Amino acid sequence: MLLAGIDPGRGCEKALAATRQLAKRQLAWLRSFPDLLRLDAGGAQDPAVALHLLLDEGRQLLGR
Image (cartoon, rainbow, N blue to C red; front, side):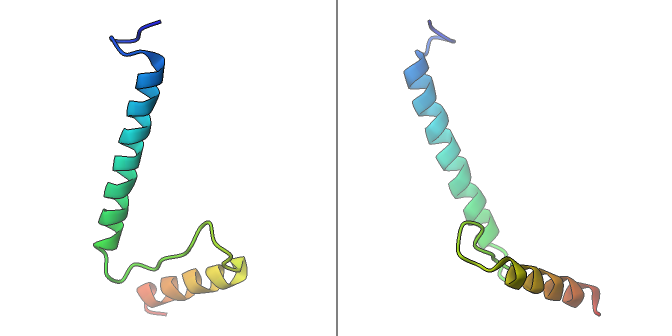
């Protein structure tokens, strides 16, 4: 079956490539914020430590 002239296998390849390109652009955009707090979502970061970091960051932003 053809969808807009592209076979499903090729369409899947194009979708994956576009997704990778978007992810690269998003990461580049996030790196443009020098004071951005980064947490490793897939890493071994202790959730309690991550929560503490986020709360501290929020308090600093609110001036508390």
